[in-house]
Image (cartoon, helix red, strand yellow):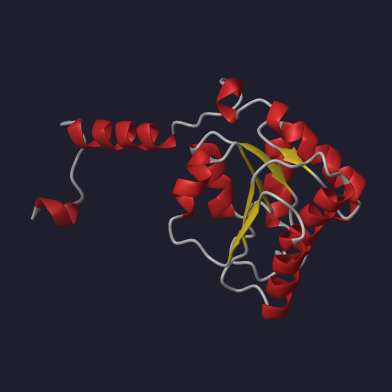
Length: 182
């Protein structure tokens, strides 16, 4: 679980903890990465609640978050751009609870990804209900991987860009820009 920079990720962390407190059968291993910008009082409250539950590791920051994400069974996040790209590139099941204010970019991204079947999404208000969050967490291991939806979205961006650039460079009929011909 990651809250990106963490500046506004405290509520999501609290919601997942509330779901674990509500439903003790949700005892899966959980790594919570708070982010460098989370307020100190929120950090302490999350740490204290997590100490009372089993199977939870809380980290303030992780410089190699990619290695943790790679080994994760699933990822819970707000769905910021970087985390969303990592979810897709590591082919991970995901539950997104996007921020809706002050910007709607996470909500737009998460909603479209859910329409494509890539992720599960919870509205932040619904996620505040521990029963709803617990149900979403319980379903997460069963959701299909993004790669299982081939044809709905092309996840080969790097290969596509490299191919297009290679085609451009290898096309001898392609005129050079005037400044390059000098």
